[in-house]
Length: 249
Length: 156
Image 1: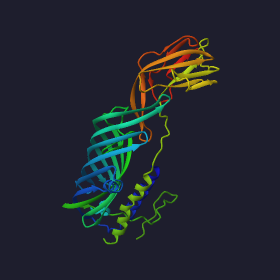
Image 2: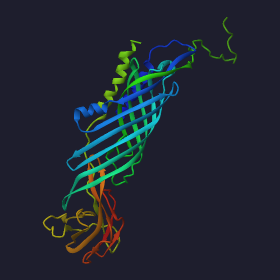
Image 3: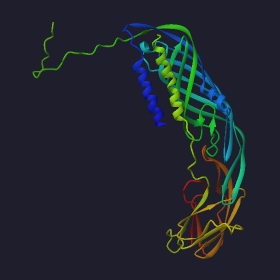
């Protein structure tokens, strides 16, 4: 994942530095929007692989030019099979929190977002291990773990980027870094994968979400834009006698 | 605004690169069996000393030896049968045979997505053993897992 973060950091810097030139001004009008979005990588992956269905959507509302309130929900139907076990997990999740736009208003213009989201997630899932095998000196043992429903809690930090590419239509992506708080399954039978969180075998999980959203402007606000101070070109070096040189008129 | 579109598309689509490089199959490199880890100690000194010769096998499994006249085994790994609640072994230390029986409860444990599930065990009672070569036994840890930590000490 180290390479992933390196790419992400580079892209974020490129975005922040490359958002076009804006003329200095005192105030700008920023449209506040309600956004309705869908995560698209889950359905695309499902249409290709026909195995694990992950569907997720969100609605967000801009509170001001920097902050948005976000509520997301999703569904997971996960199955994993390999030579020594089968695993099933089905359930739903909700995620709620705040997005912070790190771009200045004169750069974002209400259309561009490069920032970080903080979320609390709650997941309700039913997991089952229809069969698993273990082989040792005494031979092969085949067993199963019965279906059980649990609640999972997690916290998520999701930096990312989003850009309005057409009128009121945005696309973007986020990297999700999730910290597991509680699964209710006990330490012996942690969920291999559960809705909203991902791989539950470890305390931290990562993911990549790809979103497309429709934006509905509902209000415009006036935001004060700070003028950029011109860089000083005069040599202000203080002479050895400690007195400032006389101002040139 | 038109000038922004190709660049913004590029930025948004750059996530695809992350998606591609973040995916990859992984393999299981962990220990997948839980063993009773036994350390051998010389009763006269109390220090850990490997026996000159060790033979170990499950009862009625004498054609499949876990250790067969193995030399200088300082720490032995004993597998328990997950389908039963008792496992009995014949243990021969320096040519002298004893019987060793473990009583336990088994329960499933997730190792990892890559490795799957295994059985861990909890020793319900102290192991029962004959005292031909074995003098005494100390229990250090009753939970039998894949973690490399000593469970019992056999004094001979």
